[in-house]
Amino acid sequence: MEKLKAAVLHRVLAVLMAGSAEALAADSTSSPVNDVNTSNAELQSQVESLRDRLDSLERQRTAGPESAKATSTAGGLRFGDGLIWEDGSGAIAARVTARGMYDYRHYLASDVHADTFSVRRGRIGLGFTAHKWLSGFIESELAFGAGAGAGTATNAGLLQGFVEISPVSWARLRMGQLKPQFTLEATTSPFHVDFQERSLMFNLLQNFLYDRGAMLHGSFLANTSYALSLTNGTGVNLDEFQRNATEAGADGKDLTLRLTADLAPWLEQPRSVIHLGVNYKRGEVANGDATTAGYTAANGVTEGRGLVFFNPITFNPGSAQAASSIDRRIGSLELALAHDRYKLQGEVARATYSGSLASGPGFERDITAGYLSLSWLISGESFADAYRNGTFSRIRPRQDATATDKLSGAWQASLRYSFFDGDDFRSTNAAHTGQLGGNTSAPQVTRSTSGAKAWTAALKWMASPNVALMLNYVRTHFDSPVVSGGKAYSREDAVTLRSQIDFF
Image 1: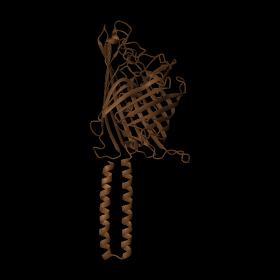
Image 2: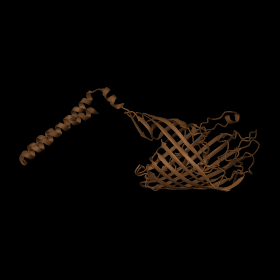
Image 3: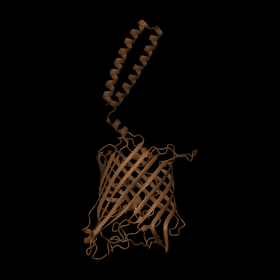
Image 4: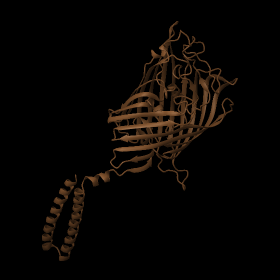
């Protein structure tokens, strides 16, 4: 490359010198003497500049490979989505990440659940990239008990740890404990969702937000994405169980598929998102004891993280009449329409559990859930700027909050309706075929309901891309009264607050 540059400069220098002679000859017959002298001085200056550049290139060429090597390996440290170190050649990079959520929850006109401060999430991680096609990441959840509710770990420990190989952009293979892509809401980071908690539909994921296995993902066509995962189907920090012959015979893996497309670029709609997606998840879970996630259908906790209003009894009766396995299938559709500062987003999903008892007929029970939300970026940012690879990421304020302008940053208001319908699960069903019961956890529920509907209003302030505060009001109506602590509740009202940092 340096030889090519030198050759080009030699040629340009020769042309300029020839051109200068021709210009002087022409000017001598048609221009005053002072004009000729001025033109000569300017051309001479250009020639000298080119000679200096040529000498510099020649020195670099003759300096040898050791000098070039010293220049290319100069590393750099910068602060962005984590603390990032990169070598000078761009071949190797490493980063340290940190994320935290700190909540306060207050329940109105209810003594069923204590008002509380909590550390919702506390995570640190370490990642690397080598030669742009090999990467890995490991992250630990430090908030003990942060996983009360659907889709998260119940104890501090490993959250995700994987290696990813990306030989081509359309086929990336990730292996380890990972997050299978499934539904728009679950694929979106909890630090980037529009509300403090995900909707009632999120309960359908149970403990399978993170799982152990492999995922192939990428994009075959522009503005599309796909993800195909094969996992244990046991959830976070759990391997396949082989404690007895029943569980060993029901070791089928979970297959998860997600396909998305953004039609806005194809329809030539700038600053817009027309997102469509379809999801399917199927697995076979062993019919084990009631203490292990997956041996019951999904339970239902409110968006205010208060009452567990839907409590199906385990499918396993702990006797010889137990089925060898339960098939679990979940399908869903997703839609997001965004233009500039406005976004409409919705999803609907159905989970089906089917099996049979050794001494009785087969059974099949469904749960249907979904949500519809409307969001408005009051401060004028665009949702389209935050959309990539089939999901929405962080909003970057047009102007971060500063010491002189403390109320700048990005402001967002959102409203959501969600529902959960498990009417197939009733207390009158045959034993261990999808009965509805209660729970002994706090707050204890002695009578469940088969469904609920919730309205959530949210105001979110993003002081910077990495720091946010949020205020939510959640009202949940139960299809029938839920009994806890000897009292019947037809609804739950909660006011929740969150502060969060996200350097990821």
